[in-house]
Image 1 (tube, helix red, strand yellow):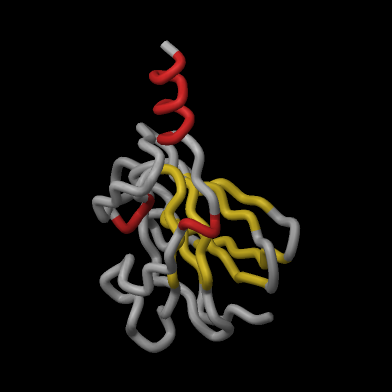
Image 2 (cartoon, helix red, strand yellow):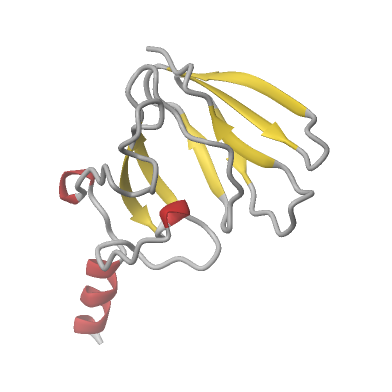
Length: 134
């Protein structure tokens, strides 16, 4: 029993010092304007990459993203729920609907915002603008 608990603990604790920056997590992550690195903790996130080092998840992902100033990502939908929490700097985020309506805001240090999964093209699309600044 104790060994099973130790194994459960070993597979359900993730430390930043054990994570590696994945600059190829996304197909466009090496393209100017979209450069970013993902440090995966819980679930594979929007990258969809199989990563045996992550804590398994069913409908949620937790990653630490490093987005250099001037970089961002293209609009996209989420298959699982994610939460954006800004540790440093500022990120312009937006949400769009299927009709092209858009709302945006700037997230700064200490700000959190959810990105919920979507199931149709008429659902909102989340993204962060390449107008990221520090």
